[in-house]
Each structure stands twice: as structure tokens, then as C-alpha cells.
Image 1 (cartoon, rainbow over the protein chains, first blue to last red):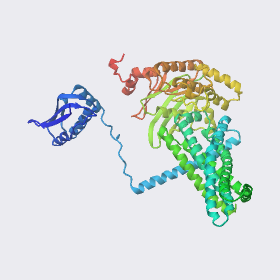
Image 2: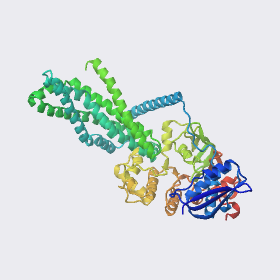
Image 3: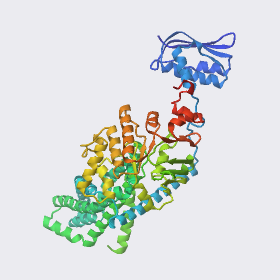
Image 4: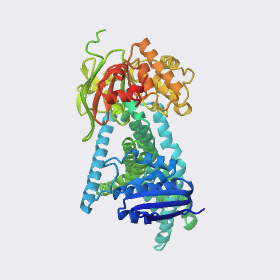
Length: 373
Length: 256
């Protein structure tokens, strides 16, 4: 039977609400607006007639709660004797503990300038946290070199494997493709001037000096930096970091320094490997599109890359590696106390890692140009 | 053994997160060999107080005295030395998930003793036997049950034969039997090793079966309402809130 609601005002100024049919959540229920409207007129009382009421569930009770709220707002006494016993008890239970003063959250009104100010302060705070973290890391390196830091060698070996050998496939793929793309562009443009052979120079210099360090670093920010943040963040949530601290083991010594070392050691090696793969990809395209022999192409490549370029590229990758590891570990240790917070710090680790890579890449390039490297 | 000054003395401790005061003016004394309960309703700052006591969170004011030496006023190396005498069992066990149980327990030994690996292995095996987990050396924390994790965490906390054992809600998440077994284990260890035990809990069964001293924290008053033997507090403390809490909300007239 369909739910129905009628309300009438009796001669003694009582609002009589008649509820009939099945009041179930998944049925289409009549609105209670007529009742609310009549309550505005502040009748002497509200009463209910439920003699024809069938099944009912939360659909009925939630509406009765709304009616009661409205009745209380208008100072109308409620006569709930007409309601089913169960519904009466549920309503009594719902109103037993009154809303705590100030518990309800109100959307705070933030002005435009206040918003900018708050965001700026947050950025300043984060930068300060990062600097403080770098300081702690330096102290930790000091303890490491004096042999006073506690860490597990097996951990270090494992981090090195994770940040090194296991990253080879993805680094191979990306570097090879980037080498090919550079070679395509080079062949297309340089052939216009009959200088197609200089494609070898273009690919080799671009890969060794810029692309291999930066691409490998970005891959590692997404792969390893994110993993560091998630690992350390989860340990924080599980109180594992507190457990280290209470044991007198510095979490930076135990968790961060080995990870930073792993990335600083492995990123240059990966970069070297990435350069090689890029040059290989370029060679592949160059040989198939240009009229040159492998020997010609290779000697052109070898002559184009000086030791300065190579060392410059490797130094960049050391810088990027430490930045990626620092971003990952700092975000992990700054993680809040929930599963959500782990996700947020992982995201932040990757974003911060990439921003730091790009900013330092610009700075380093300017320095290199001025030094004539 | 002279206990006149107490093993642990809390002096006018106020704990706060920024401007938000959690608890203020806390003063209590824990004697050597006590099982001291920190109790109170949810969210009253029990665990935060524990963090202050084990050196994880600096109090806004006040200090904790261990055998008369103030912890927070000491310099780093003295704090480290004091921390060596603590063993802590965290609420979730907080075993290091990338290490086996043996490595978890052995880390402290590696850090602070010059034992060989074989000797560490023997100590680890002995500690695991004490908590009834012998043979589980090479298991990872994710491979054992919640109750076993707590016991393994206890074995780790006891690795360096601490003077004081701290427990953060030892029975949380355990079935009644496991919780009872853990309580019994705490008492046995106290009796045989003479360790002072500090327990954060709101489980009445635990409070009465193991505690002989306590402090009651109240979230509304933001300070301690009572300190002393929990049974005496239940029977004769003047404050209603304390008596009601310890009677599980049952009014006195109907309480046995």
C-alpha cells in the first residue's frame, strides 16, 4: 500500500497528522512540507494517528525527527502516543543526547587575501621543514662517518637493489625511446642542410648532458621517491618510527640515510646506462634513415662527447638523486596518522621531487654555461 | 632498595598540542615494582601522557623524574641513557614490518651490547620463550596474529632487561582470553624481574587484576582527579566521576 500523509487542524487547535500505508525508504514517500508549514502557525499541539500504518523503517523515523525539530523550533508540544512503540523509542533515543554546542562544523569564510596569506605561510613552513630535514640529514651523515649511526647493512643492500637493478627495464625503455625521438627530429632538420651526420652529436650531447640525468631522475621520483614516502609513512602510522625513537635509534640514521645513499650511488649509474640506451636508440634511427655506416656514426658520437659533458651529467644525477631521496623521506617522516595521510605524502613526495629536479636543473645549467663546461 | 622518593615522579606536568591543553598539573609517584595504571575516558590524553613519560613528546611545563633525575631537563646523552632502561609496548605492537621477529628483538641488543650474533640469537630465543613464541624467530610480523604481535612486541620491549616497562593499551584488540593471558604475563614478569610497570588502559578487568597504583585523568577537568590504588578509588574516592568510571557507570546502590 502506498504511503499517505494527511494533516488537519482540529477545533481545539491540535494539528492531527495521519500516517497510512507502508513508510519504507525505497518507496516514494510523501513530503512532510504540509506539516512543517502548519507548524509555523504554532498550533496548540501535534498528534499522530497511525492506525492505518503498515510497515515502516528509517524512512518514517527520519521524517518524524524532522517534524519534531520543526515543532520544537515553534514551541509546539508533541503528543507521540499515536506513534508505534518502536518508532517512539527510536525518536527518544535520537533526542536523548542533544547536539553538543559547537560540535557542528561550519564552513569558515576565508577572504581572498586571507587565503593567499595562509597558503604562503604554509609554503614557507614546508620550505623550513625541508631545510631542517636537510640539516638533520647532514648530522646523520656525520654520525655515519664516525661509525655512530645505527642501520642495517642488509637494508642498505636491499635499497640499492630496489633503486638500481630493479629500475633497469623502465629506464631502458624510456631512454631508448627518447634517443630515438631526438634522432628523428635531428635527421629531419639537419638533413635540410645536408648535415644529417650531426644527428649523432645531437643525440649524444643531449642524452649525456641533460636528458638522461633528468629523465632517469623523474622516473626514480615516481618509482623510488614515492616508495620511500609510502614505506616510511606507513611505519609512522604503525608507530614503528616511535618504537625506533624510544629505543634510542635515530629514525633518520636508520631509515633515511641508507635510502639517500642508495639513490646517490645508483642514480649516476642508471644515468650512465640511460645515456647509453639513448645513444643506442639514436644510432638505430640514424643508421636506418641516414646514408652512414655504423663506424662513421659511432666515431661522430665519440668525438662529440667530451669528458666534461659526461662528468657534468653525472654530477647532475648525484644532485637529483639526493633531492629525490630527501623529498621522499622527508614527506614520509612528516606523514600524518591515517591511511589517507600516507597517500597524500606519497603524492607530495613525487611532486616535490619533480619540482626540485627541474629547479636544480635550471640552476645547474646556468652554472655550467658560465663555467664553460 | 630505597623507595622513599619513588621510581618515577611526575612533577606538575602540563601536556599541550600547541595552544590546546590536554592535561595540566599532573603529579603522581610510581614506586619501584608498582603496576601503575594511567586511566581515564577516551580522548583524555592517556597516551599523550605516556609519550611524555617515554621521551617522545616534550611536556609544556613540568618534568618526569626517574630515580630523582629529571628527564626533560637532562641533555641528549643522559636522555639516551635513561631511555635504555625503558621498554615500551605500543598499542599496535609496532613491530618493524620489514624485519623478522628475531631481527626486531635483536636490534636493541645490537645497538647497545657487544654480543656476537650467536649470543644475540640465544637471547632472542630466550625472550621469545618467555612470551610463549618460541620457534617464531624467522616469522615476519605480517605472518602472525594480533595477540602474537603484542607478545612479540613485549619480547622486544624486554630485550634489554628494562627497569620500567610501558604498555599502551595492552588489551586493545585482543579477545578476553588473550587479554587475560597478557595481564598474567605482565604480573609474572613484574614478580620475577622486579620491573616497574606503567600501563595505559581503560579496561576495568585489567585495571583491577593487575594495578596496585594509578592516576585517573579526566577529559572535562583536563587534570587528574585521583591517584592511588584503583580498588580503593572505586570504593571510597570522594569524587563521583572516578567512582562511576570504576564501576562501569553502575550507580553505587546497585553495585555489589
